[in-house]
Image (cartoon, rainbow, N blue to C red; front, top):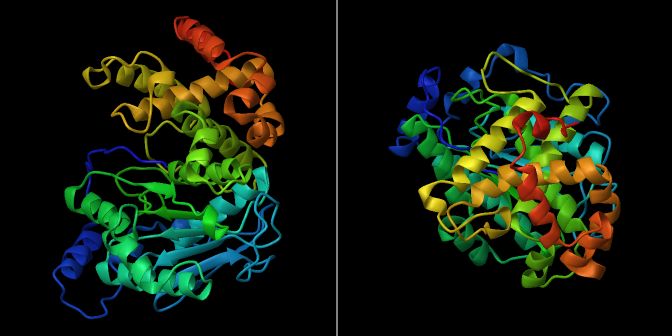
Length: 398
């Protein structure tokens, strides 16, 4: 799960978009035209996402009910064709709400394909992107639920109940984007929502504000989010059991699971820009875009969170869980923990040693085999590292 923190929207280049949202919320049309998000997509972005660089071309088809994207060089996976944990010859599939410009879906697809190029194409994989329009959200929900029924994964009634009233359903994700536009404060949420039982990696995203260049969130931040989420597919692909509690146990603590996805996303996104498997679009937004700047900011944020009143009693990264209000520090300091481990033991051992041994040895056993020490020994060592001067800490970064 990769949230984008709230940021005050100081300018207002999205009047048309917001106006379209308000009209749709008022229920003025049975089949409203897509909100005017397209008006804010800069001309320089048009068509750049699916250019043929060194990655597979992506192809997006705008339909009345949604936009559908996949690579041009591989077919979509047919129903009932699970091969969990293996590299797939089938394309990831991206489904976007019809109120979003096609460029948004292209942006998500190109980033997803670039991530599969770097880490391997673990599938089957579906990535669903919501906009803000309620009718468009309903249309995408219908597409999703019909797909679930056709593939014998879920009946229509259960699917609708999940999306319309359950947590992490499409209605929830749509509301996140709508509230961001209404409030003028950036908020974005994306997550891997299963589904091992269905044999697929299943992702959902709220309004991708970076691809729309809203709230001064850069495109690169949105691309990083997709790399972060896809790394969760890589992690889960190495866990074959369908027992949810066992899967959660094997994924390890928040700092390792989420911090690993964050660190690998940051490092590997830069590699994708360098080998031109993905286009870097910096724009004129004053967010830190360089890896070292981002990591320094994460360290400061993580330590600040850990020392805040909300985190009283939580002293180290091992204390952070998904059930406490300081989980965000696990993303930030977890990324630094992985940077430290990669510096000491090599950047390749996470994927070449840890995950291939995870299910057989368990999380602790795989950690010892990979890093040559127990997790308790690592925690003590990492705490000492966090006491070093900033210059020495920054020196470990690639």
